[in-house]
Amino acid sequence: MNIIYEGKAKRLYSTDEPNEILMEFKDDATAFNGKKKAVFENKGLINKRITLILYRLLEKSGIKTHFVRDIDDTRCIVRKVEIIPLEVVVRNVAAGSLSKRTGLEEGTQLSEPMLEFYYKKDELGDPMLAPTHIRELKLATAEEMDDIGKKSAVINSVLTEFFAKSGFRLVDFKLEFGREEPERKNIILADEISPDSCRIWDLDSGEILDKDRFRRDLGDVMESYQRILEGIGAHAENS
Ligand code: TMP
Image 1: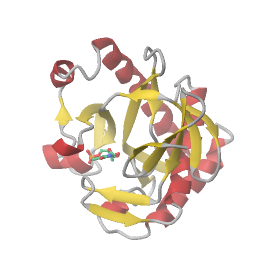
Image 2: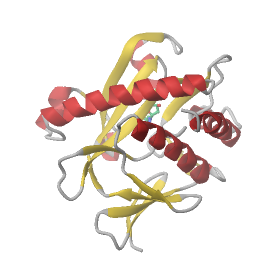
Image 3: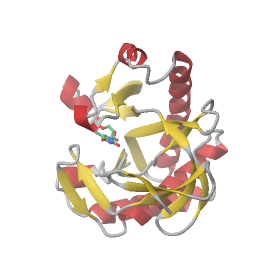
Image 4: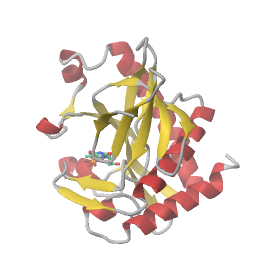
């Protein structure tokens, strides 16, 4: 197996199938564009399980993902895609960079879900992009952006309802999409959906349970991730 890409939290390997790759979830965690680093035992395993539970749920709602089959604790096979270099952020509640940029108090329920795009480019620090920037840089066509917007809205509805049923508030999250190889015509959901890429709070107490526990030095990072896994795991079968 040849490694074809190593990111901050995942490794990708080629397989014998030209249009399938192996995705491995690492225990490494980074924040602030790699400036803060740590390793959390079992993070890879927990994030992979959470991602696959959410992928199955989304597939049932008609959202195609890159998932093909599971392998073991930290690895699964996914379809090869050409990743669109955008971090697609959906927000339901003000937090993080939205609160910083706008002054909206953390925890303020937004009047409607908000969609934002960031350029996946470490050298530039992943800046926010307007649709005009995306067009000028030819990162995605107008049709693709329309498709991404519609899919993101469906994903948000499905996940928000499911997390609420499981006792959690889905504050915001980041998605990545790719063009399915070899035709590169269909856009499918790629990467992961985990507490590394979402803000998830306890529905009743508002307690932070996601990667902000690491970013803000709140402690008990893996205990919180495990709580999310158990909470959604208990509701996954009957949804
Ligand atoms: P933000 O408030 O820092 O812009 O983050 C919005 C959401 O995107 C939050 O759920 C965390 C997620 N996110 C990532 O997955 N990767 C990143 O590099 C950043 C900055 C945020």
